[in-house]
Length: 84
Image 1 (cartoon, rainbow, N blue to C red):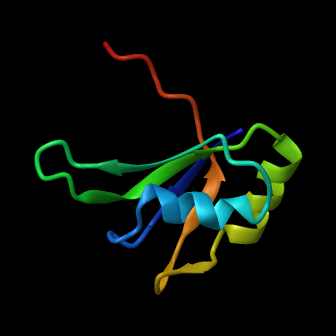
Image 2 (image 1 turned 120 degrees about the horizontal axis):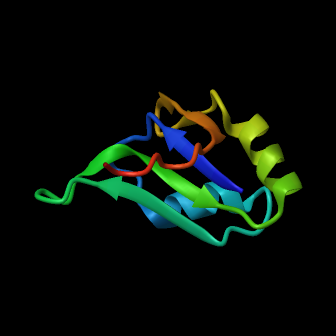
């Protein structure tokens, strides 16, 4: 399952994101989206977990939780719409 995480502190990196989610199971990948020009975090990211049961448990446990002083929004990522 691909998981979307919003309202991340700008200081969060992919290793921290992986660590947070690995408490709930195997993490295949973790990525914090950054600005192309500045390299600064945009405050959201994605985590891919191969086991849907573990992923759902992570979503339920982490949605609304405090990460670095901010309440994060965690839910299943929607597919990206095709570009025109």
